[in-house]
Amino acid sequence: MTAAGFHPLKVADVRRLTDDAVAVTFAVPPDLRAAYGFEAGQHLALRKAGEAAGAVRRTYSICSVACAEPAELTVGVRQVAGGEFSPYVTGELAPGETLEVMTPAGRFGLRGARTGGGHFAAVVGGSGITPVLSIAASLLAGDADARFTLIRSDRTAASVMFLDEVADLKDRYPERFQLVQTLSREEMQTGLPSGRLDEERLTGLLPALLPVADVQGWFLCGPYGLVQGAERALRALGVKRGRIHEEIFHVGETAPVELPDAPEHSTVAATLGGRSGSWPVQAGETLLEAVLRNRSDAPYACKGGVCGTCRAFLVDGEVRMERNFALEPDELESGYVLACQSHPVTERVELDFDR
Ligand code: FES
Image (tube, helix red, strand yellow):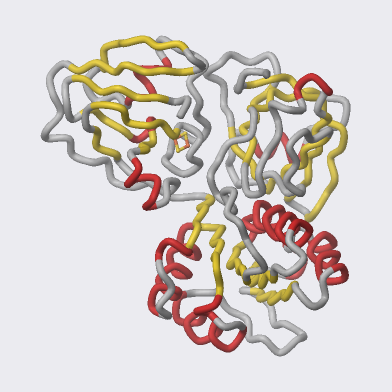
């Protein structure tokens, strides 16, 4: 069994999807395949090869069908204006080069649920299609009775990622896969009006498209505003929060939280890769920062509360999180926290990254 963490993987293919997006395929050597087994909806953190542990890293969702021992892994990458990593991937990266790739992480997806022929649906914006493509393809291939409705929103027809792959799902599963494409900045030939998929529009649109109450799982993925609007629309239509799964791409700055109850001195004990240690937490720093100073292999990617890579089980003590766009309510209830967003409230805090 290979340890979780970064490994150098060779780029087998870089395929252009749109003007500003590519699909990058990595070749996985046989001895690492078990370590890179993934579930639909998970993502990979990438960083340039040969750079220090603290180098810029970004997470990108896997778009391929779930596999326990993949020989290849494909992620979708859209260029973020002013980004520190995506312009390199979309503009310069070529087959034959090597990137450091973290083993798959993330909890967005079916999470091992038995689907039993249910109806599933997704509302996605822009590059939010990437993990949902994997979820839909894995579900439809793995469960001959499952149905999937995909509602996607893109700015223009030219900016639609994975057009061929989604069309392929339609061809392969004409009875079980339904696609609704909307464009926010262009008229559609199909008669659907243009405009953003916001709460009001979804509240009217969803009941006309599918039996909302019968949908077993909703996957919302894309920019913060779209995901929040879709969640409010679904809740207003009576959907339970437990049936809604969210993954947010791109969140703007939020105000820092006040920490009036922070203890003067605190320590964090952490278990990671089967090894434990205990270290002081300096004033104002997050638990991830305190652990990283001593264990450079602590898992993280966005450091912004979005990707969920730094998820850890809170064994003891109390923390306050600045923000959380990654953990679902049931994970919070079970005692998971985001180390990159957590500050100690008690003098001693214990985390387990292996659980
Ligand atoms: S590193 Fe992304 S949520 Fe903490």
